Image (cartoon, rainbow, N blue to C red; front, side, top):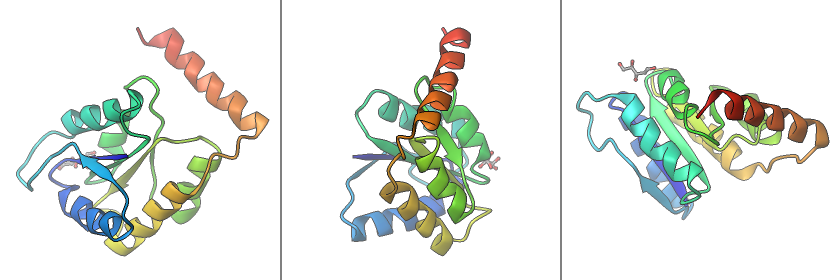
Length: 149
Ligand code: RB5
């Protein structure tokens, strides 16, 4: 199960990506928002990130205007590695190297066609499992453990 969420600015791109997920028969749960009315990205980042962190969903997709605000908020949830990407190389590398569990996209940055390519790369790429990447991710978790309650 894939968790998805957005604010109002990301909402139109989220709808485009949902169409694509449905074409691919990928199960998802939409944690809001549910309209283009102005709302606050941190609210939906938290709900979506929590679904991933709790194990209810395996991965997540988040959308806002830039992808940045919603990624910053999602990364405050313990266990979340949310990557804001706007190019194919990063969307693939963040799975291979960072084992990112949420992809964040900016609706005012990436066109829907490109966003869909990034989503597919993110969903279809496995973590490399290489020792140096495991070590670096463990260092991130260590920072989290020292700085977060
Ligand atoms: C909303 O206008 C916008 O600030 C938000 O979607 C996002 O881009 C924040 O980082």
